[in-house]
Length: 157
Image (tube, rainbow, N blue to C red; front, side, top):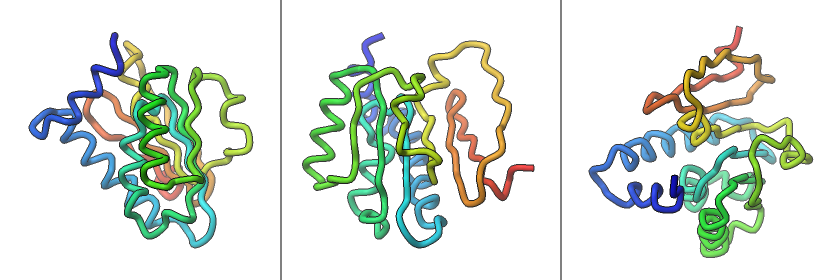
C-alpha cells in the first residue's frame, strides 16, 4: 500500500476519508475542550500526516497547553506532518518516523490525556477490540472501518 497516495483522498471534499476526517477532528477538538485546565499530553499512533490533530491544534484555544507526539512509519507522511507542524508554529509537537508498536516511542508522553489510534485498525483484519480502563479524564479514539469508537474514562466500567 502506498500510504502517501492513500492520504490524497483527504483532499477530495466528497470522499469518505474527508468526511471521516471531519468527524475525527470534531471529536479531537471536543476531547481537548473536555480536558481539565493545564498541560495536556497527546499521542497519535500510526499518525499518517497528522491531519486529525494538527489541523485542530492550529486554531484551538488549548493549543499552547498541548504537547504531542505523532508516530508514523512512512517517512513521506512524517515529512508532510513535520512541514505542517513548522507551518503552524506548533513547536510543542514532535513527529517521529518509526513503528507505532514500539513502546519506547512514547517514553515521556504517557500516561497521555488523549490517545489517537485512528489509522491502526484499518490495517488489521479480524480484529476484536476489548476496551481497557482509562485513567480519570483520559480519552481514546479508535476507528474500525469508518465507525468511530470513543472511550472516555467516565464511560469505562
